[in-house]
View (cartoon, rainbow, N blue to C red):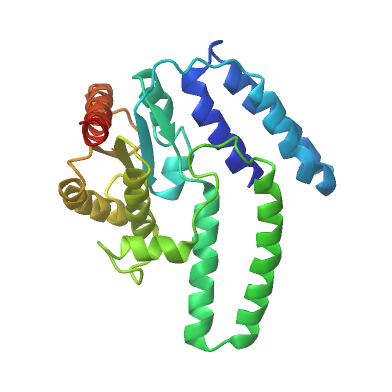
Length: 271
């Protein structure tokens, strides 16, 4: 959870840093310090570590005079989380002029917990169900304690919504009983639109069935939501011809979409 929040702060600040590379240097230094605390078993120090993260990230000078289109990532959990697996898509989007949001790894952990509760109910394993509820209650208390230390420091998705809410959102396109990343990807795409993002990127391994399914449904999503730009990227371990051109064209479309939405809001407010 601490690493998730560090990553959110990194991605929100890096596109606007005045000193290039300052956010990355701080992130990896803090990561090394956090790893050392964990290796030494200093749990109390880990719980206080967010205070240091907030203090040091807040000291980095930013220039937000030119707003950048916000791009939301969805897709297969490993590919979206590992920058080697996705050919450094986040950095390439940033280099083209975007601010990028990655779903927190917490989202996947919450989903696993949710599905485990569903299984225990179906199987009528009530002992395990009660134990699961207790575990989630204790974990939730720790989570809220950590998140409070980041209050006001993360603008986008500071608190992950409950999985039950995500499943209701994804039901617009796919039932939750089709398990896996697909429902999470679709619900997150809807969340990005609701939070004024300007584009969605779906990342998947080559010929991944859930990824291919999401790619098909995203065409309907675009029609339903103002033709919001969507980029579909599949990875097989090699560089793809024309990949950079697609990324730059997508960011250009996202910037146009951002201006169009901003203009539409002004036209409503200004007679």
